Image (cartoon, rainbow, N blue to C red; front, side):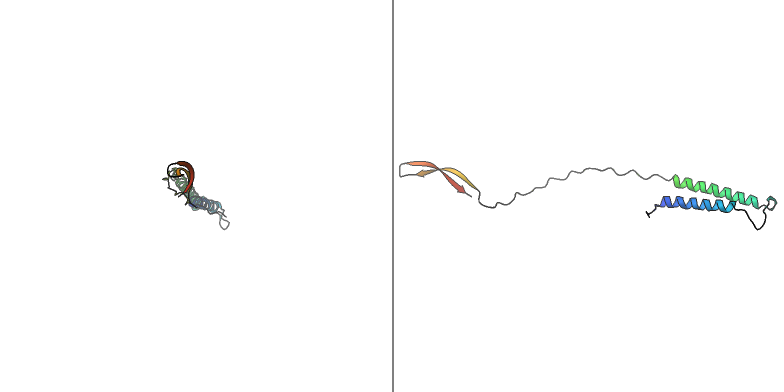
Length: 117
C-alpha cells in the first residue's frame, strides 16, 4: 500500500468525521420520541448545521493552502577542461637522417643513417 501524504490523509480524515457526524445527527432515537416541544430537534439541527459549516470551513482551509513551489530549473554547468598526459613511450623513437660519410681523406658521400633516441 503506498504511503499517503499529509494533505490527502487530512482530507480523508475530515471527510470521515463529517460522514460520522451526519450519520449520528440523522439517526432516529428509538427509546423515546423526540418532539419539538422538548427542544431537542432544534439542538440536533443546529449541531448538524454547525458540523456542516465547520466541515466546509476546514475543507476550504485544506484546499486553499498555498500550492507547492515550481520545480527548480536545471542549469548546465560546463566543467573545466582536464589535461590528460600522453601515454608513456614503450621504446626508443627512431628516425632517419642524412649524414656525411667519409670514404677517404678527400672524398665523402651522404648516406641515410637510422638514429634512435
